[in-house]
Amino acid sequence: MSLPSSVKYLVIGAGIHGLSSAWHLAKEQSAAGETPDVLVIDKTGVGAGASGIACGVVRNNYYQPAMSELMAANVEVWEQDPAAFSYHPVGYVALGAERQVSDLTEVHERQQNIGYPSQLIVGEREVRDYMLGMFPDWRAQGVHVCLHEQKGGFANNMASLQGLAGKATAAGARLMDGVRVTGFEFDGSGAVTTVHTDQGDIQAEQVIVGVGPWVEEIWTMLGLPNRLDVRTPEGEVHRDQNMWTYWYLQEGEIDVDPKLLSLEDGSMPPVLHVDSDAPLYDDERTLITDEFWGNYFKQDLHGVQGGAAPVVVGETFQVDPYPTASVQEGFADMWCASLSHCMKRFEGKRATYKNIRSGGVGCFTVDSFPVFDYMLPNVYVIADSNHGYKMIGVGREVARVVTGGHSSLLSPFRYERFATGDLHPVSNSPYPWS
Ligand SMILES: Cc1cc2nc3c(=O)[nH]c(=O)nc-3n(C[C@H](O)[C@H](O)[C@H](O)COP(=O)(O)OP(=O)(O)OC[C@H]3O[C@@H](n4cnc5c(N)ncnc54)[C@H](O)[C@@H]3O)c2cc1C
Image (tube, helix red, strand yellow):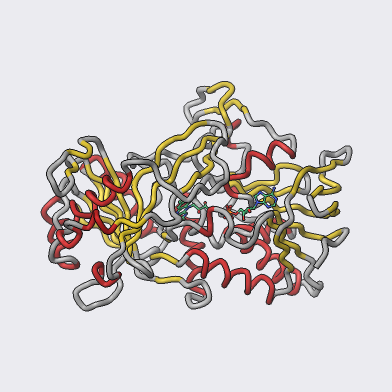
């Protein structure tokens, strides 16, 4: 297939957002009696970016009301076709330190209000008993609160993207690999008229940008500001902030029988996420950290997979090629120690740590929450601030907006919040995305 000279909807990026947007745009067009005219272009191919490497956790443990409501909508989309999306609805358990009791209690209350099923357990002893009910060798320390979300779970990254790509093409969207956007031309109103690519030019009525961690590059090509003033909810103005910051996501896997992490009846357990301020030692009793630490882990196809809190790598994109598919030195020791801290079954498993394609760089916005907005008259930008593999439903909302509708779910993520001070509340989690 060669690049057409024009298209109604041009989607840049075949990750979770680009593919979901294309699928839903094609459906919207068909529903309106039009022939779908949607083209997704990707400089490499389906799942070449962050979506193809994500751990795949689907959860709703968000302290911010707008994130929580959006996540509930995303879970609805995952549940539409678990087989096609390689989605495992095993639920999600978030365990926190004493300082997180109020945050998780608020999250739980909000989930009750929006009808998202979850259970809250508070108190060190109560939490331990609850976890022992699932895992008889549970032994994590410093854990005072547990939020067990009955919905959510995880999906297998590449399989889910192939499923989504299949849905997009079945609905009438076209996908083209190996087409890299190199620039734009604009009319007097600031709207994009022509998109330059390394395979030629294309005219588009509407452009949807879903380029994950490469967003700064496209943002700059669009002439959008990489520095800005940010007003806090209290009215204070932080001048000349960087729009983007890069974090290194640390993830890995141990090469064990996946059943090592089964429940007693042999079934797949929920995804587990532990934040603790108990000192973390390895199996030889060497201190790994006495600072607040966090981990997450799940049963995977070939072992047990998960990660730990990320580290900032700076305000410029210097890690090339992306995703780096690697982790920093020390991660394997920390993560394996944290598994063993949680359950005796992981004792001695550091030796089984696998150096596989995992981990990578995420691009975060200035407040660490997504920007979903029209940034130019006909350019809609999906900059998910690395929240997004789980956000399979954002494309549905984007398609609604781009075809002339409104999305109350996306509205809290408009760019103008940085000027108005309508920022999202911040939690006590060690993660920039909770
Ligand atoms: C290690 C890691 C683990 C993660 N784990 C989770 C998790 O468990 N759960 C979760 O919800 N989120 C997770 N995330 C975050 C999540 O992966 C991202 O937020 C999400 O996948 C971004 O999706 P996207 O569609 O915006 O971008 P991507 O999936 O990165 O896709 C962007 C695409 O754009 C293409 N592209 C870029 N520039 C151009 C250009 N100039 N021209 C044409 N094409 C271009 C790329 O080739 C790429 O295929 C994780 C991220 C990382 C790095």
